[in-house]
Length: 114
Length: 116
Image 1 (cartoon, chains in turn blue, brown):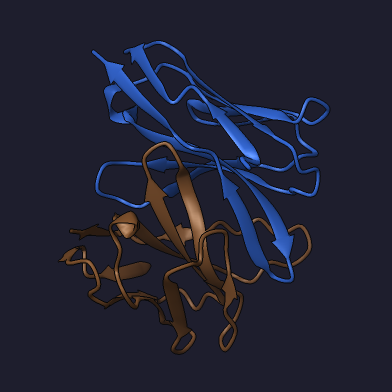
Image 2: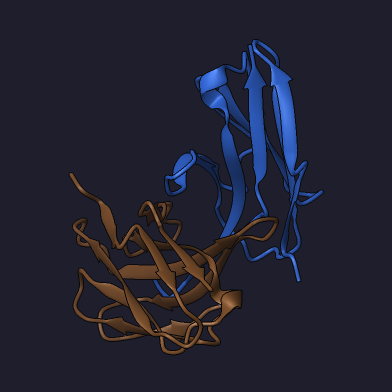
């Protein structure tokens, strides 16, 4: 049962273009939606996150758009660069007694070509 | 500033062998987690420890055991390794979350485990 559905699984974008990754969730108990970036041979690292009471959050070239009624959220990478080539995971978190119950999407492998 | 440290980084085992994956964090986090990462399946939670002295099963606990040795250390043990356990294993930690908290999970760089 995949509670967070992520698409596409792979994405190739030209340098300077916009990369868009989409996610959808089912459980309305989720209260925090982080995106993680993972480079080969490394662990995932938090990139940007949003709470469900906000429709958009922007940090530099990275923007999360959040549609609570549709239970969908997406990551936009503006002016994509070769250094952005990595695997991106969306996630949804439910706070449970002080620890985090996080459900991850299957990941999107992004390749930015010069 | 080490963060989350995992050892070993690579390991090859034969079917039926046992081994323990080690994880330590230096951020004074209360909660720790073990995930496995497989192609096309994202990160799946194996076990977690909400606080020192407690452990609970996650989504895919079969074939694994864990020990929360102290606040810093959380180990994952494979008692009798099987080829299906070939994967990349990640340890993570997080600070205690209050209501509305937004502390992220911090991950180590993983252990790449192959079972022949």
